[in-house]
Length: 187
Figure (spheres, rainbow, N blue to C red):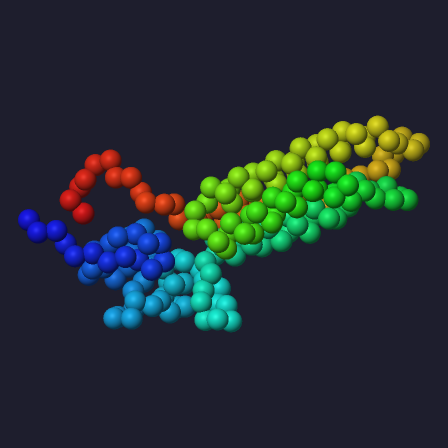
């Protein structure tokens, strides 16, 4: 039996049959001889794309990771603890770690096709955000005036956590590398 001719998917770089109209790995739709997707075809395949000025498209996974990175960065410099008279910025503590994680996440979202580095940066940002939320909340419970807690966790911590969750969605949506086939079923 002669092996089938193959072509490389321009979206995920997987080898697929030359006659394929849709990539079985990422859903990329080939449009006639040009092999370029149109926006409606991309949307019909369940792959959202965001047009950019250069005419290229970024996937929903990349957009989610970039949006999450921006939110993590904004939350990192926002207040992490507030009181009636003052607030403490995230960058005066662990916000520096989450800010660095946001920068790494943003770079990994754009510069790499994989999800390992972006995933680690997301887990670091989210983990630090959740840890600090619990830590700050427990510390501030002891500061009361007439039995009322006067200090609170600042909005920056919440934004870091929300940004990490959004970025995690993008990381999980991003296509994996080459898939291992354990049983060859002839396809």
